[in-house]
Image 1: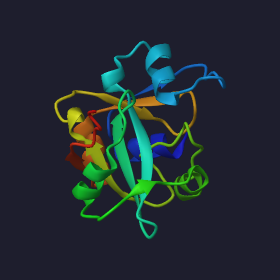
Image 2 (image 1 turned 135 degrees about the horizontal axis):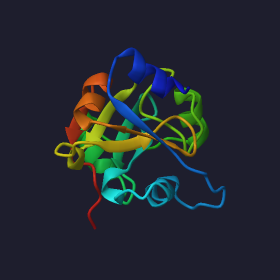
Image 3 (image 1 turned 60 degrees about the vertical axis):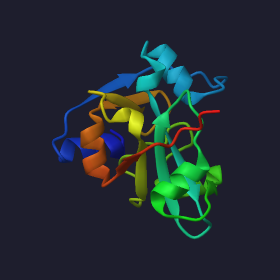
Image 4 (image 1 turned 90 degrees about the vertical axis):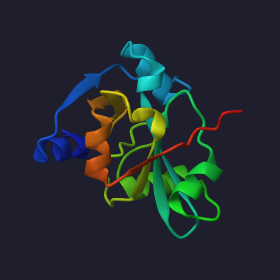
Amino acid sequence: MTPACKLLKNQKIEFSLHEYEHDPQAKSFGLEAAEKLNLNVEDVFKTLLVTDDKNYFVAILPVNHQLNLKKIASALGCKKLHMSDPKEAERLTGYLVGGISPLGQKKRLKTVIDATAINKSKIYVSGGKRGLDIGVSPQDLCKLLGAAFADLLDIS
């Protein structure tokens, strides 16, 4: 059981587990999850880490979209953010890239969830390893992470 699953269980939050055979050749972990689990890509969310070189933050957004760094910087009250180095993301979260869950990270980081999640009954995020997704209510996820909802998508 991954730290993400343990956290949800300990907090008595309702969730569902969805496992699939991860293909090491897959170009996008999130799109692979949506396809193999037969889910709408708009309901499958990826977990990205961004930094201002002092602090690290988590962005949760649909797998078929790009993160707009200006929008997340604004939502977090930062001047400028850039993507975290993958090795640093792994060190901070305790998870491997492609399996980074927003839940059960080594250190809780300030988190922003894309606003498209607000009206969904369930979204799917990484369960803490490649080939495992967790279905959870976005409201429960937000509350558990002390997160905020904001528009994060790069619509260009």
